[in-house]
Length: 126
Image (tube, rainbow, N blue to C red; front, side):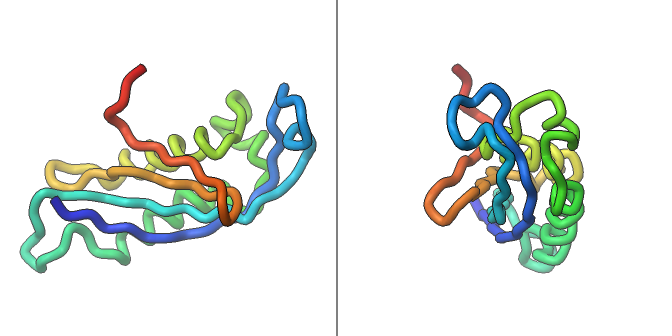
């Protein structure tokens, strides 16, 4: 199995609804995002996917979040814009455009600070 990972960033503000603490107040983050894709075989060029394509598709998803107030951006207008929910959202958006019979988004890790992150990947129920 092969796995590629890229790093990307975006900045945004949010607040956590119904959270009893400082994070209920409006605040911002410079988010760091790690996107990993995997494949069991390589293409004719010896790649899982061109890094350029992976970076371009990731940037397209993050551009919708960058320099926004997340609480008004779907789906975060309905769900709390936690690191967990952000990682799942990015995972699902990228899976819709990148997954095929060979390549699959394997995980998305979102860092809200240098020492706090949340990772989303499919496969664990309950």
